[in-house]
Amino acid sequence: MDKKRMTPMNTSLLLTLAMVLAVSSSLAQVVVPERDGAADMKRSVFGIGFAGGPASGLGLSFRYHLPSIVSYQVIGGIVKVDDRMSYSIGAEVQVDLSRTGVVRVFAAGGASYFYSGRASHNDMEGPGRLGFGMGGELYASSGIHTTLELLFTYFDDGTVLPLPQLAFHYYFR
Image (cartoon, rainbow, N blue to C red; front, side, top):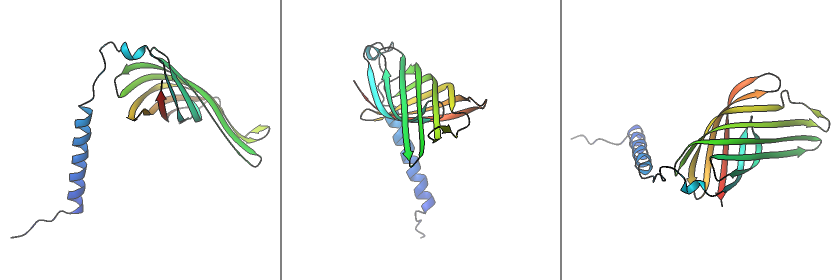
């Protein structure tokens, strides 16, 4: 009799199948909040973290989710090495379209300004940006949320591109 051995390919397939089943069963256990969502919309939520994207800026981020479907965030970062300086400052407004206990889908609009160069000259082409699009936020663990957005970004040199943005925030009340 020939004994069959587990090949690396079979092992990989088995592990992938186990992970898919574990994730789908854990998502099936999510408790959806009340139908009208009024209970969790009566309190403000604050978030601090890191956000990066061409439409809203790159750096440290503060997010304030009002006791409604609207939230806003401000983003800023700066790096200075010798006589060169790079910074960005931006803001974004988000309007919730759908929200559950673990996922939030929203429409977003943001604006930012980027600078990179010596003291009096910005070397960047199209440093002013404006973006509109949609995004989603996913609960990761212990108050930490990950946000991914796709915004159609207008650069002030006339370029328009659909570009992604990514953020990580820790929420508190």
